[in-house]
Length: 167
Image 1 (cartoon, rainbow, N blue to C red):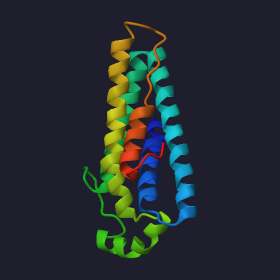
Image 2: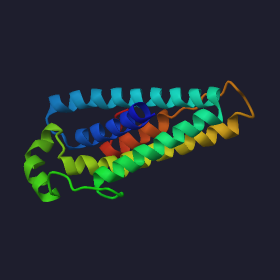
Image 3: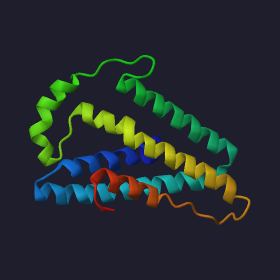
Image 4: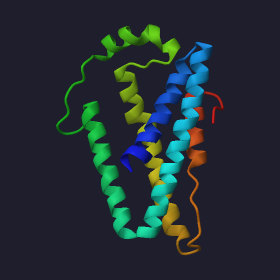
C-alpha cells in the first residue's frame, strides 16, 4: 500500500509538477515518460490493493486503512504539521534560491516537493482510497467480477498539474 499506491501516486504527481516547470525539450521528453510510467505503476498498485481487499475482506481492508493512516501521519510529521514534527534542512526561501535556476530542468526544491506531496498528491491518494472503498462496498453485492478503474482520476490530476494532456 505505502510504496505502491501511495508512493507511486505521489511520485506521479511530483513528476508531473517537474514536467510543468521544465523548459528544456529533452528534459520534458524524459519527464513525460517518467510521468506516464509512474502513473501506470500507481494504477497497477491501486488495482492490486483493490483485488486484495476484495479477496481478503474486512481483515485486508482494515490493514489497508491502518497503513494509509500511518503513511499520512508520517507525511505530516515530515512536513512539520503532525505531532513530533521537526523542521526541514532548508527554509523555503533558501530552497527557492537554490533551485529556481534548476526548474527549467525539472528540478524541484525540497520544500516545493513536500508541498506537492502533502497537497495535490495526498489529495489524490485520499480520493483514490475513497473511490476504491466506495466501489468495493457498492459493487461487491452486484458482481464478484467487478474491476475498479483508478486510471481516469490519476490522469485527470496529472493533466491538471501539468496544464495539458500528458497521460
